[in-house]
Amino acid sequence: EVRLVESGGGLAQPGRSLRLSCAISGFISENYALSWFRQPPGEGLEWVASISGKAYGGATNYAASVRDRFTISRDNSKNLAYLQMNSLTTGDTAVYYCARDSDDHGGYSLAFDFWGQGTVVSVSS
Amino acid sequence: EIVLTQSPATLSLSPGERATFSCRASQSFGDSLAWYQQKPGQAPRLLFFPASNRAAGVPARFSGSGSGRDFTLTISNVEPEDFAVYYCQQCYEWPLTFGGGTRVE
Image (cartoon, rainbow over all chains, first blue to last red; front, side, top):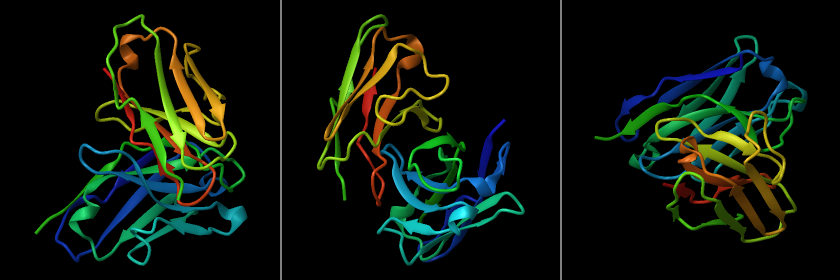
């Protein structure tokens, strides 16, 4: 069974940092690109960052709103993906989801067939 | 970036009725579009990718169509479990973008 389980969310003050983790099981993680999305309370979905699979060298892409503050990474040996979030602002408050790209060669279809249940990040003073 | 506009924002229906909603893009990109269903407190679920290809396990009452700039998601006979928010997402280029969603209530 394919599973993605996010953790690491919580309450942070503006300017501080958090690191989210995504634990992967049920598939060979290095064969798939992974992405992070977020959804502010009562709002729609927003793409945050993506990292390709091993065959494509772990290339990364970021939304403009988080570039230079957030870093996506992965440890294929541990079946984990991460989102390091620095210089947090109140605008980063959201449920953060980890998702698997539907392409099984490590590249990007840019559609996402399995999602975790999300972890809540609240940024407030 | 590609802007996706979904309409209507809300669709009020009764079980058994037909639901049709739209996703219009600011530029053309073939059929590189995905549709997702999201229920309260749950993660999104992939329904279609590309635009008319039903994902595994999606009931046949759901159909997707369109290419270029205009896309449509149809539910032929709405079931109680279909009441949710539906999002379109372009899978054509970075940055990935979503429409604002259509709530079926």
